[in-house]
Image (tube, rainbow, N blue to C red; front, top):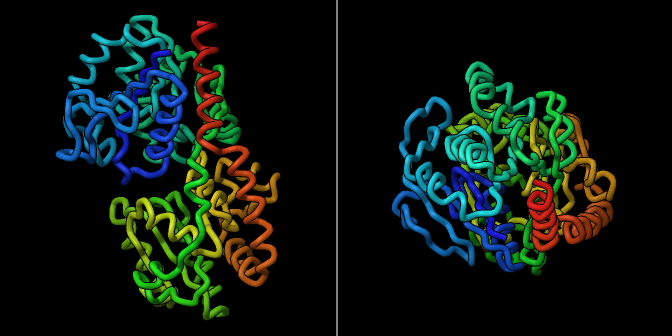
Length: 398
């Protein structure tokens, strides 16, 4: 099978968060299982770091990073990723591939890939990656709705299927947009063993001495409005007045200077910045694994989250997790007794944090269940098998 994956940005553009890492892991796993995987993307956030407009091999995956024009920044901070070179390559090369897997919906690479697939009758699958959730879609609806009617609606209509990463994403997206399309529900996957190594606290203590001998509550993700960091700061401020040993570790890249808002909330709450609350910025590799392994609790009180790769990473690390009922995999977490699910209120987050800090046995039980859930449901090898099966079905029924 020759598979073309189209996505506006790609590994190692890690500043764009977990889905890019997860997709690269999936592509690697599929390549190892014999699928001929090619990625067409742009060099957004990677200018000067990758070869441009020519194919390169990345962990067994053939990737071409096309140059693009940083125009139309009013759509997103990185623009529309308008790339004439990528468009030409799709037009000239599309017949070399059996199937096209398009990730995201709002940018030029997705729109032009769907257009040429329709034109040349090439089967394609679209993965919105949560971008069509009601909460996200409704943000700046004045510009999204016309674009949806002009480009996205037709792309979805003529796709072979829409790939959702959770049942929640499928149900809420379909209801909101009144979609009636074949659906694939396959979660993101991770390399589970990476997160199961023994913890070494010394290195973390050296980098962040304020965390030594403290109970670490970890948030890891992009710093933006949808992650519920306002909820978290309020909840932790109340907890910190009762627990002098609790520390909040906020790890992740800043988006549009959102960190300044968080700092304001911290000051207003009477918390000590770089004392009770520590920011690490973007963490990669061993540094990221280190904070997972040395924390007591992971929390993600998002207002909207189609899946939550960091939740799965925390589960695989054996952490007790607290997530909101707006995180796509909350039902799986509840059903498997792998964590606590809260509403998007500071009081709910406070009560969950307090309960887990006061009950080490419960933390341990949730951690054991969470690790089992990650191994059984979110291992990237198993996810690759599911996706390959779906791709083969698409080719057999086109």
